[in-house]
Every structure is written in C-alpha cells, then in structure tokens.
Image (cartoon, rainbow, N blue to C red; front, side):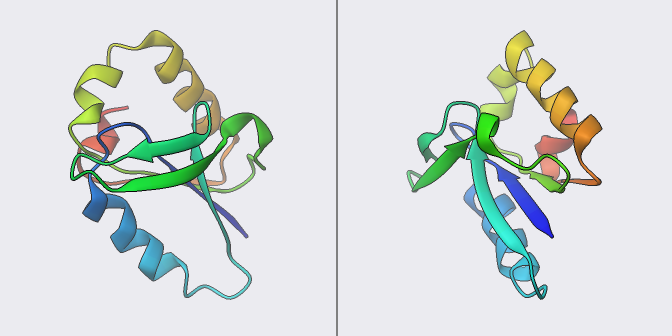
Amino acid sequence: MYINFLFFEDFETLDIFGPIEILSKIDNAQLNFISLQGGFIKSVQGYEVQTTSISTINRKCVLVIPGGLGTRSLINNDRFISVIKTLCQDAEFVLSICTGSAY
C-alpha cells in the first residue's frame, strides 16, 4: 500500500508526523513524502523534510494532507489546487488534518 504524505511550505509538523507514526505501523505500507516540486520543504516550526516530486509517485494510494499556516496562501494558488484535485481523484483514500481539509 502506498501512502503519500503531501508537504508544502509552512505545514504543521504535528498534523503530518502524528499520522506518519500511526500509518507506518501498517504492514507493507510504503510511505512517501511528496511535494509539488520535490526537495526540502520547511514546516511552520522550521523543521525541514526531503520530499519527492509528485510527478514521480504512484497515485493509487492513500493521500494524507496536513494543515498549517501554509494553507492560507495555497488556497488561492490555482495550480496547487488543480494538482490537489487530481491527486484526490486518483487516490483510493484521502485523509486530511485540520486546515488541510480546506482543499
């Protein structure tokens, strides 16, 4: 099972690392840390995570979308919203946390 965790600048650390801890316990789960471009993404608390570009992922997955201060600017980013819409349509399940559900 592929589990894709979507990262964006100023994500809330607890919103994504709590689910990572829990979902990592699933047998045969492949956890993927993804973002629009790939590379390092920084949380609102300043923690950086190395991510893979969404263009390289398996989209038949569980998609996890955290919240955080970054959602406030991304909600007006048409490209990001379009990508989220496609990812959600392709995913088997979508889990969102806090303001991540605004998408």
